[in-house]
Image 1: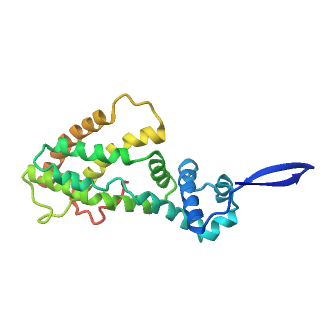
Image 2: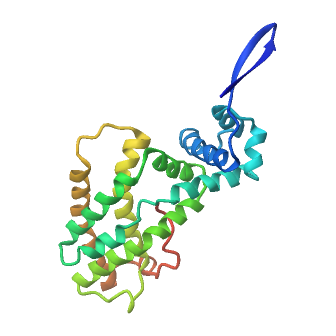
Image 3: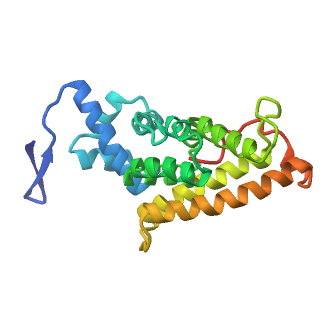
Length: 243
């Protein structure tokens, strides 16, 4: 890093200036810094402040990104490069025959450690700043796992297969509620920063037991026609409302 001196009221001000880097290296540096910057400041944070934190000019940022939206898209592309759901479906399928409580706990015990503080805060910021697209993309990555779990719960409860009766709206909400209950472990830790008294394993297990019992009750009601028509409507867009 080099030093640039300018005069202000007769006194020199020394500012750090980032060293020259190759284009792909500089772009990667900007994305890495932007992940942290937007996680801490939200997506309304000025790009000039982001540039200053790296030691480059705002104009340089826009040599690599056409707009702030383009930069935000690159940030989420980095987050999705190794999404926390990678390998989760395979783990669930490999545990076939075990109790559902154990299988759900195993899957989320694998997923939650992959939710880093920066990634967790970025997704929370996305919701607060009405930047919905990454939330939809993340949910679409989790959907195959949700389908597999729901299919197993239906099988154990003697209900129709998903091939015979597609996911109901009420079922979609059950899967989202399960996922949100699990991810709130990380939100409380990385966003709210509240004290935790249970280990990941204990908390995941407790949520698995609670959700398993409740999901079975509601599934039977949904398929028995006891729920409202709205809750039993086929979910046309099951990728919404969860990270």
